[in-house]
Image (cartoon, rainbow, N blue to C red; front, side, top):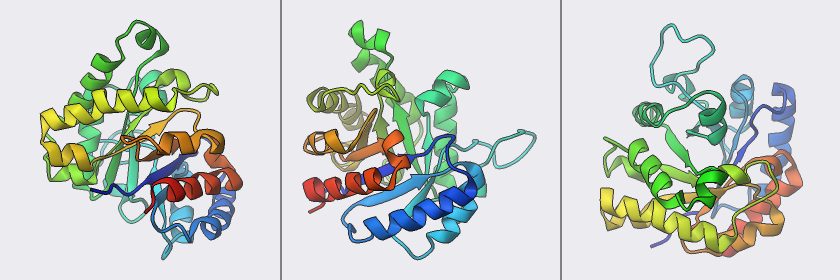
Length: 257
């Protein structure tokens, strides 16, 4: 069994369309040799078209930062999964910032995941607990619940296209991160084991699971060395060419064989 490493840079609300295009041209030249790793950038919706065009024919892929579950309609400011066809290969769903600031629910994450799969996209489903939940010893039960809710009604066959990102809320943008051993243990107990219960050993063993939360070149190797961690969903470090290229290189070196 070999799960291909995957490193995705979530740019959040950063980089103008022009800046995004210039950035990915530089980044692509730095990471093209690492074909043992899936790598993607997630620009703003405004920059998706330009970034997608700039990366045509390369191995640097594109992720959208969110998508609505409806195909179309009266949903001001939203983008549907079907609109992302041809522009992105992945879409991030259930990110903690969307859950916290935009009242995202587990039910909506599930709807979005199904819509993304129907549109031919690969959902990256983010899960993770708050600091209060972590300190109260509620992490495993809470994250297991998020995983089960997000995957309700999704078939074992479709799970081949699903990526899950474990991102403890207290580690996002704070400079803090779980230790690699803590993250691996939580991913094993709260993500991979539920996959075994919901589906089967094959799904559990083959689903790619990322860690996210203040990942940087200085700690990437520790996370990638863990058996349950297959990559990273990266925020701040993905905004710098040198840092992002280093993360991809580390993933290739540690787990890209």
